[in-house]
Amino acid sequence: MALIEAHGLTKKFRQAVKEPGLIGSLKHFFTRQYRDRLAVDHIDLSVEAGESVAYLGPNGAGKSTTIKMLTGILVPTSGSLVVNGLVPYEKRQQNARNIGVVFGQRTQLWWDIPVIESFNLARDMYEIPVKRYKENLAQFTEILGLDEFMNVPAGKISLGQRMRADLCMALLHDPKTLYLDEPTIGLDIAVKDSIRRFIRSLVVERGTTVMLTTHDLGDIEDICKRIVIIDNGKIIHDGDLAKLKDTYARDRVIHFQLARPPESMAAICAALPACETTTDGLRLSVRFDRFRLTAGEIAAAVMSRVEVIDFRIDEPEVEDLIRKVYLGQLSLESTDSDTAAPSLVEA
Amino acid sequence: MLFSAVIVQIAGFLFIWTIFQRIPTINGWSMWQVVMMYALIFVTEGVGSLFFEGTWRLSNLVYTGQFDQMLVRPLSPIVQVLANAVGFNGLGNIVTGLVLIVIGILNTPVQWTPGRLLMLVILVASAATIRVAINLGSAASAFWIKAPWSMVPMFVHQLGEFAKYPITIYSVAVQALIVIAVPFAFVSFFPTAFIFGVEAWSIQGLLTPLVAIYSVVLAVWLFRVGLRRYESSGH
Image (cartoon, rainbow over all chains, first blue to last red; front, top):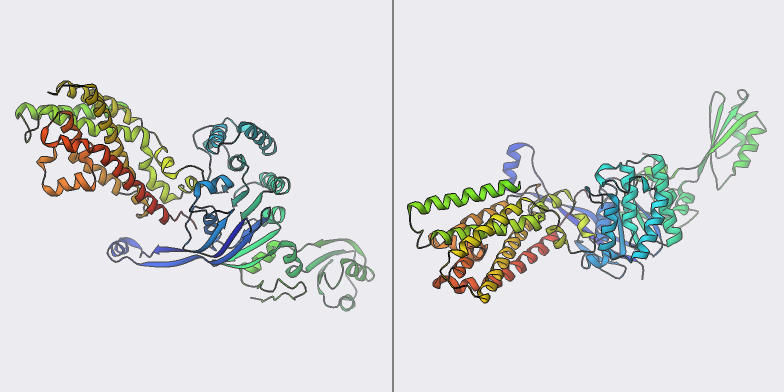
């Protein structure tokens, strides 16, 4: 059985509908109106131990709600959910021992006491053996650079420092699963990098299962092998990241810097069938399907006709891909077959 | 904070003292008996503030979603809520309240045996337990009322004001309210009747530990039912 096993998992919220202003408030007081909103709509999800999963979706898609059900914070409206052999919301305390949780917008640290005191409290709370606690603390302190603010209250440290301390706090008890809800939100590039490196090392060295939601697609490429995309409460894609790229991000673009304007554009275009060629003064860009042509073929064809000073290749960006999915321009239903042509719907 | 609690209590005591300068008894209850009820209300409130102040913060935790954190730790959320904050003003209430209780006891007509003293300790502990359970149970309203600040715990708390005086002065409806629905009468009135050996009410005073158990069970049940409704924030 998989580590996380969800079937038909659903969460419905009842929202009060209130008209604006004082009149609206009064009206709401006497005749309450509600609207049901399906935040998570019958999702099936299965995550094996040791997997690293990116859980993506536009704002309000149901990412956080799913994570909150998996961690035991919310009780599902319907459906079945078993995590590590436990139903999280029924066995909250037992489940808490198996998981580490980092919510980017919140902190597990106590605001008014030094960071190290929060860690010591975690040691007592999770009954971590002293030896193991010291090992973990020493290792995390070194990798995450916690030394400089170990004795400062959590309320007085920067966001980047707080996130690093929170990660340490969530991992001291050797959790099997780590849930990260937007772990790099609002952080500078250096801190983002160190956090991503750290999480990747957890997956590789400790075999920790990681489930992460993010809007920062750099997080995904650095950490995750699998991506699951949710929209309007439904899972619209679940699969391997590399495969997704092969299927949908097939286009590459080569940009050439030319020595002088080409004599005949038509000749170049003719030599590059099935490519999209654009020029702008001394620049020439060729977009091609990397499964039909190689970069070498393109380069050779161009260089035999014009003098090239410099060139570079643009990799397809996952970001572009995901953006298209969010905007509804790309439907990902056919990811099963490697060779299926991408179904691009131009909006 | 600490001294203001002391001043409030002394003022309350002076109020009772002034009344009893004019009239000998209230509905058959003497000054020291009324002072004892008053002191029990304050001592138990002090215990609630000093050790279990967290119940007052529950509505805010629930509204902002900070309560999430308590659900991903390997500890009972109820224990975490109770221990979430310390109210040092409770210390003033406990100290002055205890002084008034001791003075009250010195003015009782009954013979104090070790067994009776033990019963006194049990009664005061039970009274404090009832008080904290009432706080917890009313704080659980936060799971239903989705507002940053709920009136319900404060309203329930104010019912305790009734129990500063002998319940015999109230109508049946008010008596039923503070004996059965929100058992504040077991925090002050019934234990006082036992302490002073008032025949008509002493037996009920001995029920106080049972009422404490009933209050805790009810409060925990309310909390658990509410917890299932918890919706966090920012989905």
